[in-house]
Image (cartoon, rainbow, N blue to C red; front, top):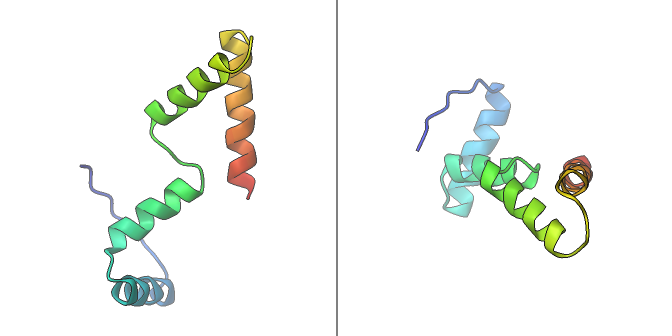
Length: 78
């Protein structure tokens, strides 16, 4: 597992600490889940998405990749 150091505004850090304590979860877990919700996922997930798109259609590899990119961007906008 990799480590990461980030700088947050004091008020945001305090809110994060309070939320973690209230939910009985670690700050790292909350940050990790937040990244996943923003569409930031491991490369293997992207490959699986492309493979699923190709299985469900007659798309070429390039078309499937374009579709996966489009879908990922759409999720990130929400």
